[in-house]
Image 1: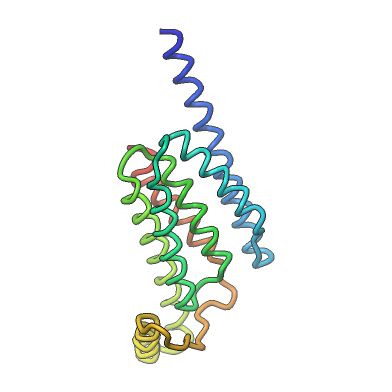
Image 2: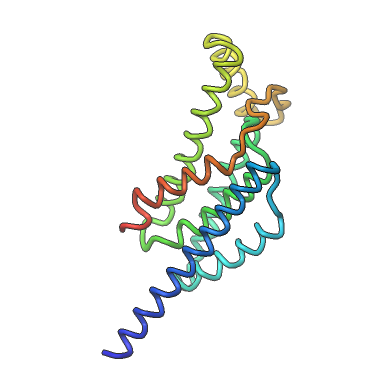
Length: 188
């Protein structure tokens, strides 16, 4: 009985520590992305390694984390190619996906997809609002169609239209993480 209690206490302490590390990472990157429009590559690497270690502790010998990272990378590159985010946002997307899936016990790919789609929809929604205010509804719709064709055409040149000039991607990822964790990651 004492061993079971000690194990549960250790797991709870590690979970609290993981939430604190993840919160620090998220808040620090949110702050630096808003204030300086930059995030630290070294911090992305360190927190990716920490996230992978915690993921391995929670889900021992599970290679599904590679699929989690691949899904997040693909979504990040799509958002980046659509000119709504930067490479730093893609790195943060991958790191946050690893951490978010570490906080759930099942449906890891589902959790990743919920995070990616939620963040993508937030990015797209804010992008649309920005674009409509800038170009008008019909012009924005026409440009979005052209941009989508460019994204889906292999080897096509990227569009020149930059949707966000000063919108930090960390804001969308932070909101996406909160919504994903509240929707299923914390309470399952």
